[in-house]
Length: 610
Image 1 (cartoon, helix red, strand yellow):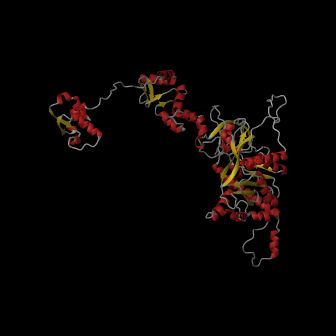
Image 2 (tube, one colour):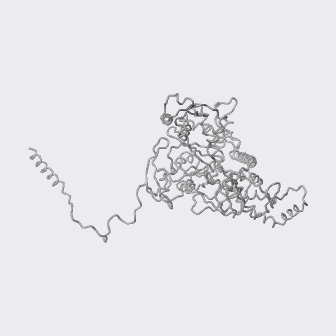
């Protein structure tokens, strides 16, 4: 292209003359001898026709003049910009007005300071090359905001913020001031997790007086379907540790669980005085609460977001899952065949805390062994041993449990710290939202705040739980374990409420307004009916899909018909309302008359056809 442009430019001087073209493009030497293959080459050669020339190669290093002349002219910027800090004059003035710093400046000007880290440069006071600021001034607050709360600061920790600021600035007491500023940062308090020991010393539950008077229960879900069962209902006696494992099928309701509990537990051991459980929707339902209220049973729920309150059942769940993995890992869908053996194994296994097996506590004798006859043992002696004093057994059991609790408290509190809040304190609340299952809103856990609030402490409940003043209309239980709370540092009054999606997941305290839709959803290979429910004080866009069986169990008074709410009154027109004028009246013929007319019409049709 350069050759074509040069020849066209100097055309008046080159026509009719023989000339030589010097180029550092070596492949152009064969331009006139090679085969033309592209349209561009044909166009270029057509423009070179009529000229007589020879192309010679000249290396670029030897072709300096042409190389320099052929370069594109670059734009040059001769001006040099220099940033200017508009506030530097105000900082100089603030430094001069500070008595301590003004004295240092005077000594520097009088050369009274020898080997001092302070220097003067262009009227500014420097400390080891860093700009000096007056302590506890508005300038230090602005610098800390810039070094910590901006995108460049990144809300880093106190040490990193200190290192970033000390690169350019210095003032007396800056380390303490920066650490305090970072500790009081409201964003950091909400978004960052804690790396200290968990709050709250271990508070074990009181030891029951009699067996099967105080129990705990929980569900093991997520199991593969085996003979139609996919849930395990675990019930544990808190004194003897004796347990029952009950098989359940989806969908199960509070009525189903209560029926199983009566048949498998109450039938054998009677009605308990108290039940410890988590805040499962089954245990929180009105049906479950009412049936045990009538029986005189106290329901003790774990505090919100603290399943450790029912730690005994949680540990037993792990034991059951381990047992089933050992025997049913090769055939996962046969796990239900091993449940009765798992129950026998656990109830006949030695319990370190009790100092004996649960079987021995309940029945007063050791569990039967494979060898049923021991040589030299009298039957009368065996009977006497089985009829021993049960009170002594229970006394020894309680003593062993108390010792075990003391050991447990001692070891657990090594990794915990005692935290006490006063009524009126402002605290942050740590929440761990579950995955939102409804179709209307979702919680993005990765970017969700670690803490919400702050909220005011209203009451101390027990040793390690507190009741908070949550926002009006909140649907979660207001009592929380101390490990979920963090005291507010500073006096910032900015409050962040609870997430709406979180309130919709924890409890069934909502009041349904109407059912606006139905569907079938496949769950674990089974088509499950669901209803789309609009809740009270919620827009229709936030309606949620609920399992029909579960919803009907929780709210039996709510109609499941898919229809809009109608106004009060009948469907007949009012007498005083205007009516359209009646022009035609339809009278239905009697059956006999109708049949005769049909026969007559059929006869006329046959005559016409004939």
